[in-house]
Length: 113
Image 1: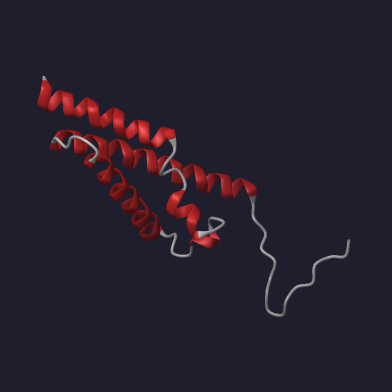
Image 2: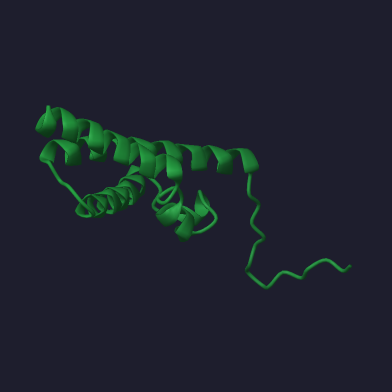
């Protein structure tokens, strides 16, 4: 096979797998932390029903804003695409179940017992 020809002014990008994995782990940790904190806040506020999931997604959007303000102003430098920053871990079972767990625990502590 012949090597690919580069277009003029375009540079092939190299991705360091260890740095990329570290970036994804940091993003996953932040998303889980935000899910736990938002679950606690929503549980204390007494939100019930499907409306509570709206707050989860709003908190995850705030997580994207926090990453952007922290220094990730050009996500393709740290992740493969913008979609990775926006949607990585939002619908993961760990994030959703952590949110639901802390939401229900703090709702029960504050409003049931």
